[in-house]
Image 1 (cartoon, rainbow, N blue to C red):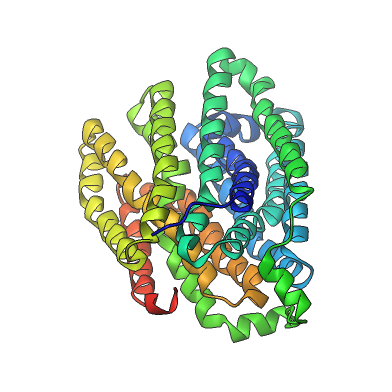
Image 2: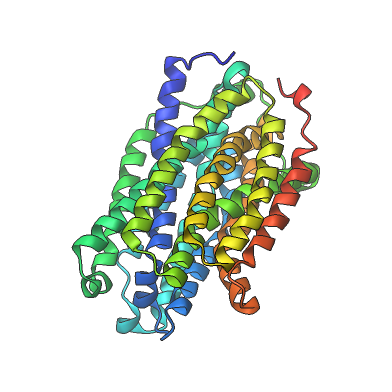
Length: 422
């Protein structure tokens, strides 16, 4: 039976939840502002190419994440979780603000998207330390009886950040004309994101070190391995962690950044209705994530993960059919059903990736696994999906990419040994 969180655990959940808002706020701002940002930073006559340009910038920013995972992972394992976690949000806030200050394509031409890319690259380095830091903090402050539940809160702040980003985008777009958005209105969400970052910095300034890392320090067991030794010694669990996250990454980023723009371009759905639908789905997901975490402390999380992955595969044929037949009603129903497997996998993935590694290399190893799955596979998924659709001239062809990632994750989940987890 899952025990209630104690006062210290509730405080940590509060700080982690608010701290995760900024990372996903800026991700969704870029995704949902893609049509406007495409016109601001590119100059293609085809609106889809403008969106593709923004999604490529969106995805290319994730390429820096493995480097950031190494940097902040080493800080977290050698100096402390608190130090890495504090400076990650400081360094994430600065480029978020600077993106809002960038000159546009009409002002400096091709230099505009290049500067956007460089800031996205800089932004993604500290972002790569955010989720691994959250996972470490929650896992290392949990009790055996509530570890699934506590670690499931890793992504609750992410969902709230996404909801805030969509809501702000909807508000700004409803108040300002398209001309005003292109001229200056697009900057507002990035500056408000920086304000969220300042609030996160304030919250983390007095954050305590995790008891597990304190134990490593007191017993002189702090990791002294080089990064190459960590990769060599933990290569198999790191790859397994990537496999754990493949399905979660591809579905979530397609859900976040590709599907809304795809539907908007191809089916001319009212942007307001689409945004409100996404807010509603994300709100439901926010409630379901800790519920699945609590469920996994009672029942087999391995079985829940495998069942959820097969449920994703089960939904792919009707998803493909609804896209091919332009059946918006069916597409809406499938989108609602997708919330269940996404929420359950999102809830349970943090526990199992943390459980793969010993405490002395946990921050680094989680960072590598998480950022290769979430950053490379997930971050590039929207651009890959658009490219597949354009190359094949088949709007539903991206479903094959989802199928591939689903199979990879199922194979990985089958290797879970639950009897060693409790």
